[in-house]
Structure formats: C-alpha cells, structure tokens
Length: 285
Length: 330
Image: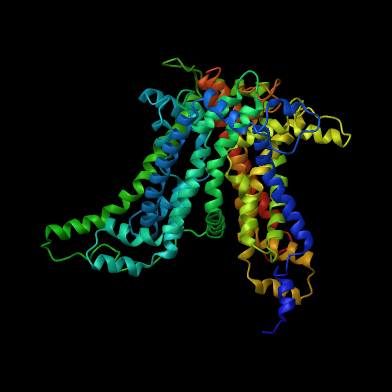
C-alpha cells in the first residue's frame, strides 16, 4: 500500500481540526437547544405581565419560588412526582429484567423456533401499538384499573426495543465458553443468567434502564387516557395546569421548569453514557 | 441490522446428550431446565405484547365494524359503515392532510440538518463528547414541556417569535390561526426535539466508515464535496433508511404537540377549524370526547394502514435516493 502523508490522510478522513466556522455553527445549534429552557425559566421567574411587554426582558426575575408554590397549590404536584417515580421506576426495573432475560435466551440459548420468534420481535418494532388504546382502555375499565397506576405500568412491562438491544449486545459480549464453564460447574440456567450474563451486559442494561426511565417519565397519550386529574403523572399534571380557561404562563412554565429539572440533572450526570448508548445502538442496531 | 447469527450447535449449551437410561432426579431436572427455561425467559415479552399490543390492535379492527359508544355494552354491527362514513368525513381528510403536512415539514428538513450536524461533529473538535451531549439536550425533555414552551413562544399576541419578527419590521404571524404556519410551528417543535438525536445516530454511522475508503477516494482525486456525496452518503444508507422509517412511524402518530399547541388549552379540536388537528388527535377526540368507539377504531385502523404504506414508500425512496452516486451498488 502506498504510504499517505499524515497531513493528507487527516484532511481526507474528516480528521482535520475543526475550523472557526464549525465551532460557530455548533455554538448556534447549542444556543438553539438551550434557549427554550432558558426562556421557560425566564417566564417562570417573573409575573405574567412580562409577556405583554413589547421587548421582553432577558434576565430572570425573582418570582420563581412564589410561582412554584402556586404550582403546588393548583395541581397535586407532589403526588404527580411520586406517581411518576413509581411508574417509571417499576417499568424500568421490569423492562431491564425481562429484556436481559429474553436477550440472553435469544443470543445464547438454543431452542426450537428461536430465529422465527426473534424475527417476530423485530417485526413488532414497526407496530404502532398506541393505535390500540381504545380496546386497552376498555379492558382497563373492565378490570377496574382506570385511574390506577397499574394501568400505566402493566402495558409497559417489557418492550421489543429492549429485547432487541439486549439480544444484540449479549451476542457480542458473552462468549459461549463462559456459559459452558458455568454449566460444567453445575449452574442452573437461571444462575448462569444471573452470575455470568447479567454482569457482562451491565453497560447495555444501564443504558436500557436510562432510556426506559426517560421514555416512561415523558409518556403522555396513554396516561392521559387512563389516568385522571386526581391521580396524575407529572406530564398529566402539566397538561392540567395549561388547560385552564385562562393560561397563566408564569404558572404553567414554572411547573414545566419544575418537571424538567429532575430530568436535566439526570442528563447532566449521565449524559455521556446516554450519548454513548445511542451511538452504540445505532451502529449495532 | 445484524440478524440472528447461525451458529453450529455448541456443546455445553446444547441439551445434555441423551444419558444412560437411569437419570437421577437432578439430571432430569437439569435436562428440563435446559429445554424449557429459554421459553420461560422470552415469555414475558410475548405475553405482554400479545395482551397489550396485538390483541388491542386486532380488537380495534373488530370494533371498527360496530356503531358503539363508550357507555354501550354492545354495539350494533354496521359492517364497513364506519369506513364509508370516514371517506365522506371532511374532518378526517383535513386531519390526514394536516398529519402529512406536519410530517413532511418535520422529517425532511430534520434529516438533512441532522446529516449536516453529524458532519460538523465528525471534525476534530475539542471536547467532542461535550458537544454531543449538548445537542442531545432537547431529546430528554418531555413532549408536554416542549409543547407548552413552544406554544408560548409562538403565542399569537405576546409570543417571543412574533416580538422578534416585529423588531425586524416583519408583520406578526397568526401561528395558531393560519393553517400553514401552525404546521410550521408544530414541525419546529418536532425538529427541535429530534434533530440532535438523529444527528448522533448518523454520526455513529459516519464514524463506522473505514478511513481507507476515504483515502482511496482522495488518491483518485475526489474533492471534499464529491467524497461526501459519493462515498459518505451512500455508505450511510442503512442508517438513513433506519432514521427515515422510524421517524415515519413516530411522526405520523404525532399527538402531544398539536394537543398542547391549541390556543384553547385542553381542547382536542386542533385549532378553531381543525387547522392543525392530526389523525391521532382526531382519534383521541372521537374516542374519549365524543365517545364513538367504533368510529374512532376505524380511524385508528386507517392510520395504521397509512403508516405502513408510507413507511414502505419511504423505505424504497430512501434506498433509491441514497444510492445515487454508488454505481455498482446492489
């Protein structure tokens, strides 16, 4: 092979040092990404009269706390937070558990119908299940679950995308030899899963957990259908705040800010892992 | 997409060899364990999908043949009556047009910008992860929060967007009332939330392109632009297909953004003359506000078909578009 000078190689392969323009465009993008949050906080920290000014002020005011207090007075916000934590936590736990189990079986165990069943899982990825909410709602009413948290938890116990991801990841990181060794040592299948497979797939399981938690936390249509204003999740409480006859935006956006802060904190702490997980999933998926 | 890899049966994992006639209880237990536990492990998914995914979808098609309200215990069978009524229902056609319009305004620009953004991120940056985290930020915010914030920004009277337009001497725009502009505003929400996410997926695919291919093109004298369009883009094809198809399935079911964008909050009308009501919103309104379950089921089922058809069309289209420039490709 012909040797290519490092400079040329770098220029050819997108390895060149980013120019001023690249940084400029990226900064513009970043500002665009951040601005709506900032705006939301800005409105939340003032009173509604701010919005009627011709040139809105660009510095936060001092009313955020009083607006936040009004949020807690207007809707059962603590309850909503608690509900969201319970729902998202439960859904995350079961999704990670069932997805890693199924991923283990599909990737490393041999059984009749394995390939066909896995193809079926992949096919269900394309099925818009949210179009089935009408019978689902009728079923939940039948069970007496309408308005109860289990109506939001049970339909989301495990997802096709979770099973798919975990199968792909397990196939990559768990060698057959390791499972054989554990079997020879007398492990039952479930112990092989617990002591061999699960520790090996932990990074992917952690990503699946974060992803599931966020999806569940942000879910809207189904909770809106099946829950009510007395027993809401955070998203439903927010929607309630906004749907008064007159929209007091400093109140509504204070609620929005409050609801967004926890997820922003999680994102600041775990952002790197989330990015890595998305990019990995993209290449392998 | 890597599908199931076919592997030769591997010894230890394959069922234990048929042992001598006298198996101890423990051994029999072990054989049963090997044979049945895989089914046990995959069972939760199939049970959950069957009960809350497949069954409701099938039952939706059954319901769509009935005239049935929320409080009815039994409906009246009317065959395809709901569907023929749907074809004559102008609100349905409005909703369908709105959905497609918002979908085109969001998916198209979004993917182009995502590819551009990925190209920017694919240069040698300081703190590359920091930038990636930054552009992903909108993705973690809930759709409800996005909807509320943008409904405020695009407010007809005191919205910031209109104030800025006014500063530049441009007339205020009725973002809620005007059909096209309302679609544009809703598409902006979608784009704001998803562009960074899609850019990361495209970036991952760009990083996976072997450098040797770029070097070969360079030696052949290809310019940077030529290399992008003739080397990078065709190699991104599987990823672009993936992105387009997933945004099709998601984008056509758009619900939260139009619901929260309404100037009459809490309303399911999608604007005073349904100018931005989407199909999912119409379905929701029909099922849970006017409570015609049978008719709403017909809407759901039609949307299901529309999604499948458009997903297939987009799949074929992306395959064609992204393959221009790579002659010997397939």
